[in-house]
Length: 362
Image (cartoon, rainbow, N blue to C red; front, side):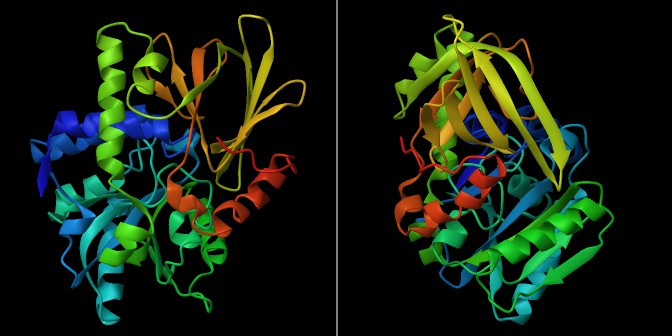
């Protein structure tokens, strides 16, 4: 076990915001929640346990925020997660499973910290894993779903402690559970918390993204180092992970619509040669393309933003016209390709942004 301090947690949030590929909650909001928790408890200390260290008699569970990142940015989140965790712990106990660990459901400046928030309140350790190794636009588009971890039971909670517990007839019907969670979220102002995917030690080692939080911490450390020393952030990141530059330029146009619990839109980036580069998003960045139609990259590989003036990684809740940005391509965790479901589950989201071409991998 390792005890994470404030600097470790901040670096994890910076790295996971970048690796969230447009979603997962903004760094600004994640740090605000972190500072609020620090004031409440007087210090930040979070126990982190590797998947290999898990007690085989105990299970981990994913606890995540859900809703519009644009709304979340200005919202005081916290009690939802505690209500959610306490509820699923009770539900799991009645089915013979003891919850002993917390899991981040996806990367993001906000959702990487959500299980840490619960850990600070309960003392339950966080696992050094992530359910996707990136941020995702739906429960059915996760490593949990792709690799056969059931989503029964699903628990949703609001800040006042209203609880919904759901079991689908098909325990692997994450799409149905996503619809249930989205409807709950919309009923409570486009922000809520959900908990699901009760994971064994084997699940954590072989089916999701093992070592993900430590990986994000290293990326965050490198970004912070580049900022402190005024280095080229793209070159600095490339020293520690496989990646390639897609475009550098200025965001000259952004369209955004909040509907059905998602942020939908397009970021248009103009490079030094006055060429237009377009990124279609639905919370997360889905398709990266030039204005002439050439596709550079699609999900599940990662399309990641960073502001080259401030060195701040950006979600689609943060991008704005006038920002100077670097967009990088990063290969996603290998477990996305264990099964065709890792690709197939993305296709309906491509349809929603008008893309019907093939998956373009890193």
